[in-house]
Figure 1 (cartoon, rainbow over the protein chains, first blue to last red):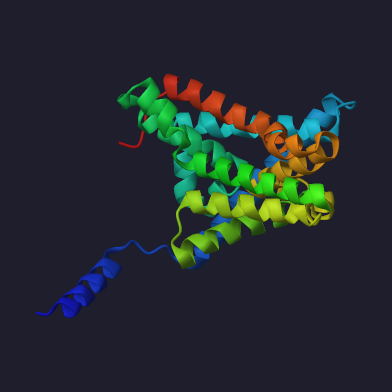
Figure 2: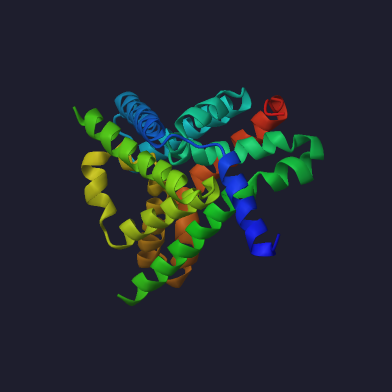
Length: 148
Length: 117
């Protein structure tokens, strides 16, 4: 069997073995779970502003995100967030809770490699790229704003 | 009533993420990076604030909001501090979220054991 033919056969085999996510149910699930997480955030924000009416809007948002990050981190710790993730896909990745999960989850998983090389290093496997992108992009935007 | 907008817009953004997963097979790190960039761009062109006006948590809770506050921080810090602001503004505005994520991840990874084995 020549090489291209063998590669083709292999690719067909791999394609058949990759688990297929059914498109429509997963889109629907990511939609409503994502929507619910956002509503939860809005609820927390409204509660904070209700308890502390004098708080600046931006400060209230910062606290809201911190509460969501706390919840997601805790749910990751007890193993619930990964179950939500399997069910909701993008609905659990795109909100800020997914960012929190992406830090806690590898930290937990590589705990056995020690505190420094396990928890501290692996924490940033996904969050690192996100922070780098954000910092570089915001620097560029700031730089452009100096000149206009 | 505005909770309906929060739900619809937040859900729609998450569904876009899921579409990227299904049709391009990209990893979650790439999704997060993409959406942060979208947020930075929306803020840079001043489109984010009018959307946030009625979408509220629907666009602030998705990681797009994180990107937007990075860019917003840099833009306002440049006004008060000049060039230094371009360096410090982004992280300053998002320091709370990043620090919270790191601190809670540290605490909970010490307390709990990994379930996915």
